[in-house]
Amino acid sequence: MAHEHTYKAFDTDIDLLRSSVTTMAELVEHQFLRSIDAVRLRDLSLVTQVLTEEQNVNRLHVDTDLRCNQTIAKRQPIAVDLREIIAVLHINNDLERIGDEAKKIALKSRDLQATGSPIPLAGVEKMASLVTDMLRKAIGSFLQHDARAAAHVDELDDEVDTLRDELTRELMKLMGADSSRVSAALTMVFVVQSIERVGDHAKNIAAFAINVVDGVDRRHSPTG
Image 1 (tube, rainbow, N blue to C red):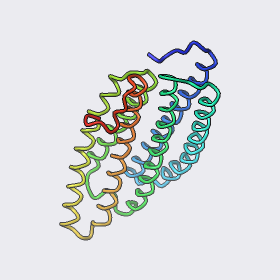
Image 2 (tube, rainbow, N blue to C red):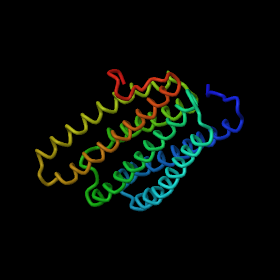
Image 3 (cartoon, rainbow, N blue to C red):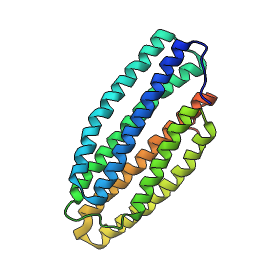
Image 4 (spheres, rainbow, N blue to C red):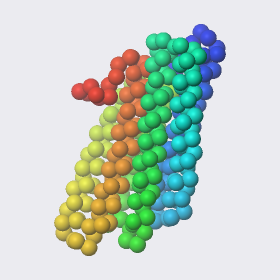
């Protein structure tokens, strides 16, 4: 359950920050899903939508960062209150970087317009679905101060990493066997890498959720 502060004004500030996180998470999730659809459907209109959404994400990123700094200066929070605001600052950055990866995927999809994917997309779609689930669970764990749910994100990340390795091996094998498909296969390697990075950012968000609750930074721990 989210921590309640005795000062209503501070609660209002925190609620606004949580709302900003929720809004930005929804924006970048839509960006990411559209970028995957751009690869799957070879639809250039989806690329345009992703690039347009990037502007909204960047604007909200700046606004949220400013609001965090204003809240720290005005309220001078300590302990869990300060950890939550610092978490918002970091989560805000990770969400913006997820938007960046979605943009990269969308732009790479343009290189596949003529040929399509050189491999079946079932594995890529499964990987993207897992990453989307990671993002949703990570954001939910932060909003609900649920360290147990945040820890589950690590398990999903292991699945994502396994799929990344399998898909990369398949694409590398294809490049070695058919020189005419090297360009398309290399493009898909970059797409797979970007999907995996989205998962890494979701994992970071979950780690910040744990930090808010327990005061422990798991990002660089042996088990993190």
